[in-house]
Image (cartoon, rainbow, N blue to C red; front, side):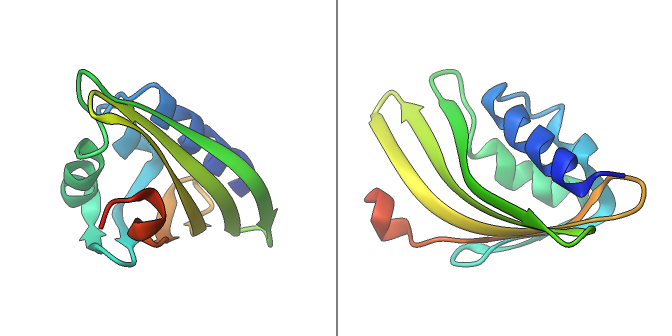
Length: 120
């Protein structure tokens, strides 16, 4: 299992905006925390929050700035670029992923300030 490859693949999957594909990256009891927003546990809750990213007039691209790993944990500095009918914005994010031996994400914590993207 290559945790770095799993995280890179997950970031690439966002650009396809296929909400059916994304839960497959997660273990059934995974936890996704958007630190300033909330905590989401399990496929249904994670899918629900990820659906907020996507829509017919939305594109998303995660630009990886730095990535380091200790084997099962991956720290990722990125900029998430959004393009919507309302305009474009970019959100700088620091994230920590935990990946199990089966190559599934068990934990994902995103740290960001919504004000940087003009969201608050």
